[in-house]
Length: 387
Image (cartoon, rainbow, N blue to C red):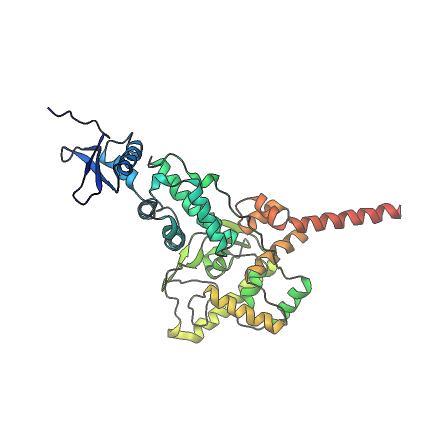
């Protein structure tokens, strides 16, 4: 009577075409009552035996169908599962970004690798190749972040034991030097935009530090004129999918913040409300708020603005002022530096800017406080010398 083979034990036989075939039992399927067997092929008996030995190690602690599927799952298959089932808590735009990174970078290189065979040298080589292609250090870190998060979830559901992305080296990011407008440039800009269509928008941005998405997503119900405060609760965003529509999204750090701008800004907003009422009256039935009623800043027909539109109009105003190229985001940096120069502490600035920590704010604008400390030191020196 033939002996019943233990789970994982293999047999080898020669095929009619001269090659060799090995069979190994890797588990048991309770739904069918049958053993689950795998076939291995090779040109020589030794090649097949080596493959059987490798599979025996691979399936050593595997018995159920689910465990077998986990062992055989490729990284590409796991990423499909992760994108479909495990990132429901992220913003739509973030999910689009994750999918793009997976499809354009991770899957083409590592997708066919078995999830449980993904090792540090493979991942490190992948990162190095990204660098050789000329991708920025920041973007490589974004790719790393997606892969790391996907593998972390694979650990939580016990598909793998270790996340080897943690031991790989990443290129150092070079923080781009901020380019705020200095005081003379600000005066030239304010003079150039007087009477222009986007004058109020630029002024509000310059003296509140709102992100562009927050600015074009600001609604009148978020402004309390009696208390002189602005509640920043949402932003107007568009996902990167082709043809995607704009929608209200949560803030970058997910936290609503309340800012109390200078009285000058409140007066500008009061003036702008009157101007908008006049535009609405002039447009009559052509006034088109669409899905975004009550916006503070709109086109002349009441429709919402887009970030590219704001950027384009800002460049025109810079040219009129005779200033070099600046991003709209540089108005935010300008506000931050103006705040520090005006005496705001870092914690207050962090809250006004909506940064996730005061440490980040200090790291971003620490050079300004250094300049202020040097100026203070110089004043003290002059005082001492005058004694």
